[in-house]
Length: 391
Image (tube, rainbow, N blue to C red; front, side):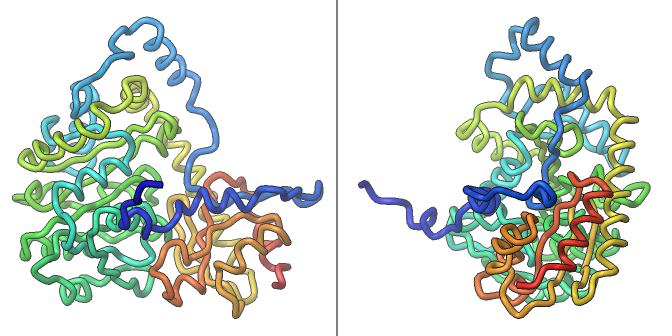
């Protein structure tokens, strides 16, 4: 067999796919069906109106089956610019928006314009595993930034890590995997730090539609020269249940946008035309529906917090958006416990080791619970099973 790129070979296997393989050959008893808290993605189809908009476009819009503009369709770019300008109180133009094949591709595009082999990027731990995978595949060194109380990273700790090869700091809020919502003051401190050092601040807000706070979560887009520092990422997948259509967005300065266009043209040419139709329809007509989805997700968060509070030995570190980050009470690593939890309690959850550097004790001690697809009855059952679990 021909050789394999060592950077690819050294990267870990996709965690969600690995967890799915644990399901092979397992039959769950009728009185203990599977509770799946492993994946942070909507499990249901989009609302009927959105599906009909996509179906109508497939039948009646010839351009829906052709290549589109590399940076996205103008109407969707303009809608994102208007919404972000309104939501954050800043001024974002359509030329500062790119539509991508999902938010993961937006991250890849941003990193590719910033860094190459031998450069460094600061990533809070626990991290979103696909971010770490892409950095590894590009030969970029990840500098792990530990989180403290409330699962929040410290700008002073990050400042001590910045060196001549540092190109960016990456923040995810609300966070995947911890669910932590980063305060506006914390984001402002990271912005000032990045601006002082002439590096980028990549802000992944995939779950912004499920933030528990009202009003703008930060003021970064109102700051002079924001487009020289901030690269903001967004996903339509969670808000409008469009995971299969792969539609995301990147907001950044024009100079970077020209470089990102080169990357996007090379790897995808254009984002899904039908997905963009769905995203625009959702932004236009589903405001009230999305508000109700947010309310239900926050209710499930509250139910999760209440249910886990009663567990002896288990400790909830943070919860928000789709996630709870939970410390378990056992001596064994979560990597060992996760397959047993599936076999013995019919609970599929990702171990913290999938979100931390190899050998990091934080990973051994924690699980990520993605509760957004579990109703309140299921959340209560989840807590009962965790309470009874005795490895």
